[in-house]
Length: 84
Image (cartoon, rainbow, N blue to C red; front, side, top):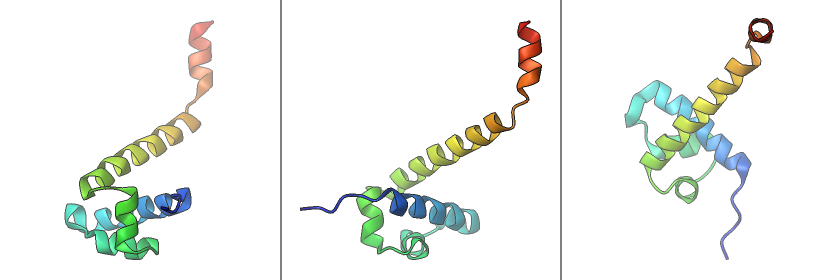
């Protein structure tokens, strides 16, 4: 029976991928990403079937994070004044 996936491991992999791709670009190896996340390379492929899947998931993760940051800093008084 396969072990359940951990959200903490997935997050660690995405954070390690962010750093690795930032330093080495698309050439960053999955072995380095896994090592920096503190997991075996095979574990990375339990979460992301291919490197392309990892890159796509990382894009969505970073896009969501950016949107959250932008919304948190949005000056709502400007939009509220326009609706009145």
